[in-house]
Amino acid sequence: MNEDTINLLRECNAGCKSGTNSMEQVQPYIKNEKLKSIIDKYNDKHIKISDECHQLLNKYHEEEKDPQISAKAFSWISTEMKLMMNNDTHEIANIMIDGCNMGIKSVSKYINKYKTASKESMDLAKKLVKVEQEFMNELLGYL
Image 1 (tube, helix red, strand yellow):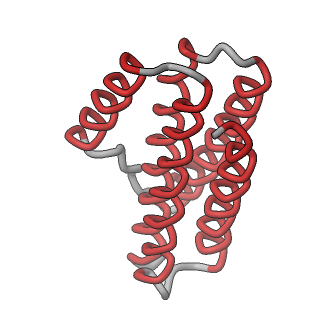
Image 2 (tube, one colour):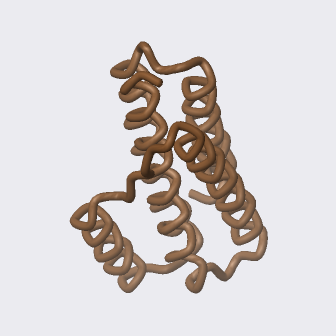
Image 3 (spheres, helix red, strand yellow):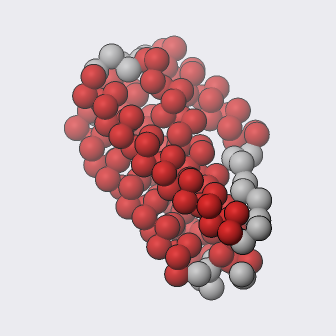
């Protein structure tokens, strides 16, 4: 298996973990049941894609990658600060949309960077980008 495939799977897996961490972090602040349901739905989708990445990495006898500790800490602190100042539905949607934008940009960058990755890993990365786009579209109505 080539390095591009492994690297792309690792980045997608780390991105999914970052996304699920953020979605789980905002859960206690959500008052709108419909928004909670949307976030739960996309959290499940991210977990499933992460599991697929993990299974493929296991198949190739490779380790997964966790999000960087510093990035994870910064994201957590930043989100907590925003929610302490304003934890209404609009702010939660805004935080999640920012995360979707970051996910779309970073995974797209890795798709372009790891051009020789396997079709299977490319398809999984493109699926993640599509999920991020769909999630963002559903959140736009809460701004």
